[in-house]
Image (tube, each protein chain N blue to C red):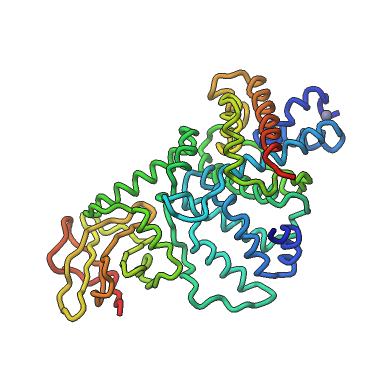
Length: 178
Length: 256
Ligand SMILES: [Zn+2]
């Protein structure tokens, strides 16, 4: 078991570059992969990855404990949304909320879950639940926009997202050992 | 009051997913401060949303051309961090160059690509870029494409890298590549041409012509036997290339 992210962040606050490197090694794949998926562009994904990790280095006090993976995912999605916002600056669909970076996610249930297991769990969802979840999260669009694009009523989209997330949670729960 | 609980409870999942419009998200944040039931629902789903993000995690290496963050990116970040660290560990002298070097969209595995394509229009630029790169490679008058072996060579941490204007010359496993990431377009109506100078020879041997893509990226295999080469060069030439260089080189690197 590698050192806990919270302890590593303590050392990062003390300007410990080795601790930072350990965090980079453990988490850069989700940062880079998420940015690449949202932006569809390796160049932009590298820029986001650099921005996220340098933010962690320069402002480690923004991490308030809890689930480190949840925090870094929020930083990454928000930075990627910034990029999408600039791209869409000539007036298009409204972009969604940014996820709150200053707030800790206490639940660390899936903090160390393997990406392949998540993909397997996602694959168990019926497409009508999985698609709006992926489109909303990775596509960076609002649920109104999902409804508009798919021609499905807004209330139905919301329900499917909620059912899908709950189903995913229980599917993941069966994969987390101990 | 900030709206009724029943009305807001319906939105907790989409809020956790990050798909509420900003104005509604503000109202939600206020409500979560005061409502335990919504708060519990939110907490239960927030970690699940993090797991969704992990499904996009990139791969650990570039085999199969997977989505893969270049070690050069790490080197760039660590260089900046080490410069400001308390421990002042000396950066490795063999660290790759720190200028932005883009390992572009060929870094997409079949598996990851299928996932990406599931989004349709959202990820169109990804496939466009891939196709564009392939087109650039064909334009490069070479039948070779950027295959897995090339990617592995280019990312090899033990490769010898010669920094040249607009990119680098990479010598890896006795293969030599021109790997440009910031190369200007050639003048209108012209192309770049690669040249090699064998050891013991005064003659520049003509190689492929090429143009960088719109990001300034061009990857060109030059030789599979570096030990036979004295130098490599790039010059600006007419389309189709020349038998001997007609302009002074924009890149000239001695490999010995
Ligand atoms: Zn409530």
